[in-house]
Image (cartoon, rainbow, N blue to C red; front, side):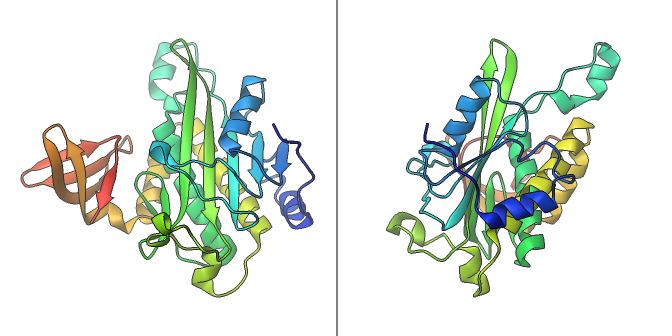
Length: 280
């Protein structure tokens, strides 16, 4: 792993202002000028025993990745590339309490949605840009992609050991590669002005800590309600995905109580929990 360095003053100051509100997140902080992948670095730290809240940030990634094995374009000082270590909560001994409290289960799909809420709220608060979330892991503005989220779980036998939640956020205007230029944008490109990366980062940690605490209390429904408010496309949008017999089209009909995407196909409703959904 590359050697961590001290974070820029703007990030250090923003972290200091939000020390109490962000809880464990951002402490400890590993900051790199360049690294292969922040998710890989965070996983290495987790394997070595790093606690929940351990945070990895990089100015650039040389092997950044997104969902389904895609490459994430991560040029130097143009975005925010962050990964967080999440540990499962200990489950109560009493079966009746355990059944009523799903906080310790922490499926990666749930954390992906919670991370989307945290990122959207942070960007709105720090920049004023009215971003939206798109199922399952995108942050968008007027259908242009601003960020992606990648949650990767590691198990030991049947038990969850940890989850790494990674964020890749486009902030400064850059020239994107042709394969993503047609669908990607940046916060500063949309606003026409510079934004404070340190403030965006600190607000992300605060909002993620808030969502994490809600999940710990077993209040998944409150997180999903916030997600629905931030995602107009989750209801009434035409989508396509690959079913067992080939491509299927339908219209989104919201989320169910577990965070699965519901899609109306004629007189039936499909429940999508994984795979690629194409938004038409």
